[in-house]
Length: 449
Ligand SMILES: [Zn+2]
Image (tube, rainbow, N blue to C red; front, side, top):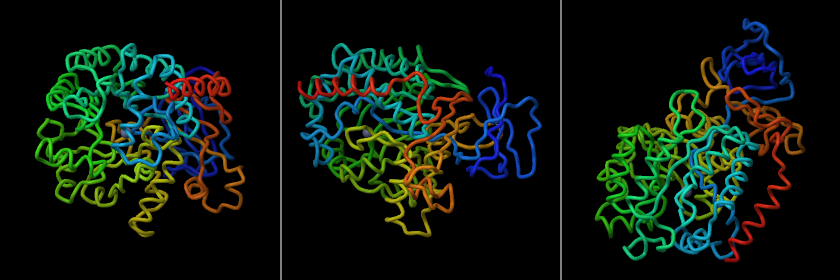
C-alpha cells in the first residue's frame, strides 16, 4: 500500500465525531471524508480497514512531560515529598544523566505514550549535565524512529543554589550557552506548517530555577524565531512564596514582567490562579496544561479547570514527568483528569466527553496546533483505535464512555499522519522486552550513583 492510497476506516463500533457512523477516509496524512450512516465514500479506490471492533477517537495529545524521568520512577528517596523537597532529592540523580540513558528513557516514554493512544507529545527537557549537550537532538531522532508527532522544548536552568535558586550547580548552564543552543535546535529541527512532525519550543524550567534575564531573553528569542514558549507556573504554594520573597509579586505578575503573557505561551499546572489572573490569561490567550496525576501524587493541589474554561482559558492535558506520575499513559491521564475534576465540580459540570475533549481538541489548541485533535475533514489523520475486548470492558453500555469509565489503557491501533504507528497493540520494529531490560539497567546505574 502506498502513502497516497486512501484508507476507509469502516464501520467503527463508535467514533468521536458527528456524521461519521460509517467511518472516515484518510489520504496523504489528512482526513478527507466523513461517511454518514447509509453512505459510502466518494473518494475512489479506498482500501478498507474494518473497524467494527474499534472505538475511534482523535489521537490524544500530551502537553507536558519530562521523558528522562522514566529513569527515576517510584524512587524511594523522592517518594512522599512535596515539590521542592522532591526536586531537591532528584536533582543530584538527574545530574548523572548520560546520552545513552536519555535515549532509552525517551524511547520508553514515547512507546508508552503511543501505546496509550497518544499521537502528539511535547517534552520539557531542562537537565543538561556536561556531556549531554545533544539532548534535544537525541529526542528528535527517537521521535523520527517511532513516528510520533512531537513538540520538543529546549528547556533550561541557570539559577542554582549559589544564586538563590533551587537546583545544584551541577545541573545548570550559563545564559549564553542556553540561548545559543536554543537558536541552534530551532534552526536544525523546527518544522513549520500543518503537516509538521517535529517542532521545537523554548522552555526555561520555572521561576525558581531560571534568572529574570534568561526568562526575558528567551521570550524575545521565541518572538524572533516564531516558536512557542513553555514553563511550569502556579504549581505550588511554595512557588507563590518564592516569587513574593524574591521578586515581590505573584508568579503571573512575574511572567508578565518577563514578556511571557501572550498567545505563544502554554503553562504546566496553573493550580493557584485567582479569578482576575484567569481573566488575564484568557485575554492573553495563554493556555494551561492540566496534569491531574502529578498534581495528586505531589499533593500540589487541583487545577480549577471549570473556572478556567468559564473564564475563556484553553485547557489541555499532560502526563507530566515520570518521576511524579509515574507512568506515561495518556488514556489513563484522561480518566484521572475526569475523576479529579468531577470530584471537584460535580456530575453536571464534568463528563467523560469533557475529559476526552481536553486531551484532544483542548490539547491541540494548547500547543498551537488547531489542525490536530479532531476528527473532521481537513484535519490530520492522527487517530487512536481501542478495542473493548478486555475483561475491564465486559458488559459496558456506551462504548465511548467505557474508554474513560472502565479505564482503557492500551490502544489496538494508532495512526499518526496517516501511517500506522501501533498495529495490534504493538509498535512495529520495537523489541519491548529488550528495551525494558536496557532501560532498567540504565535506571539502576543512575540511581546507584
Ligand atoms: Zn513538569
